[in-house]
Image 1 (spheres, rainbow, N blue to C red):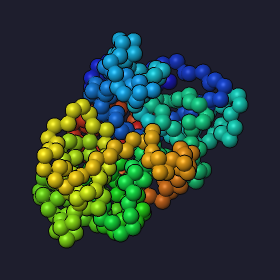
Image 2 (image 1 turned 30 degrees about the vertical axis):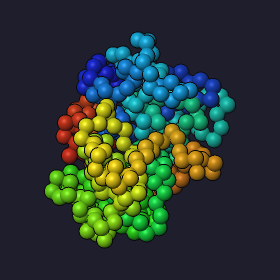
Image 3 (image 1 turned 45 degrees about the vertical axis):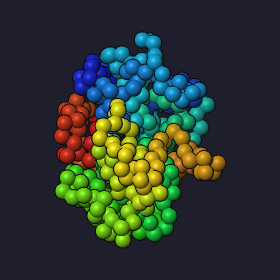
Image 4 (image 1 turned 30 degrees about the horizontal axis):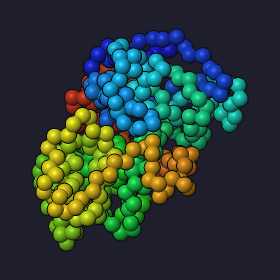
Length: 350
């Protein structure tokens, strides 16, 4: 099977590996397509993901120093056990089913948090069967949609509120649409890239802003009788954007952060609006959810909801590039160096 290998930071190549055996309770699928992440995957591509130097203690939930055999070392292969984030948005056709697998059959189309490789073997419980009449391309948004659904629930949007979404990549595009569906009266988008702004304006936003061309916090005050935004969701992964999100937010409100920031943050000013307006910052992380919802909204329910939403959201114009597997290293370079050309890149497999 075809796999990806990192020989070092930004050193990505396509290689081959033996096909994996199917164990009890597992399935094997042949990949049809997969979506590339601009945030999490780029941290691995650039070699700055914490797993290269530290480990997360599952009991304390702290990142702590790790021994050399507990961290990722080059070469990093997508098919190796314990390697995450070399792709997590795959859609494929089931070609083999292990014993004791129920409800999934050969020929089913499934979405999974699986790496960019031509086939994968996963626990059947980790596969999400897509409706037979759904375009497989829509399935590459499933993992991101679960993340953004969790983020919107963490934000507690109230009917009639003004919501500002900072960062209009794939996650931001989904958040804008979900905020609208969740009852926001006005949805404003913020991004420096014209392609993203225009796509969000077409699909969900009432108005979009280029932060390089105006003071967005002032513009939002003009549109809200000087209140500021009721809810601000930060999805850019940029420290300056977080600082501006704090300025955009109305006093006594909380900025929801869906981004995974890469390393220490520079340019975040905690001495002005953050302090005087009593702004909160809440991280939304998809592996955990607000205790207020956790009793009723288990993971299975969130997945079912996300699959239903896949058939209702505007997704087609979010896929701006389709590449063959052999061209994966080249499209990673584009995402890394010139993200203005891409919203969602899709890998197409033979």
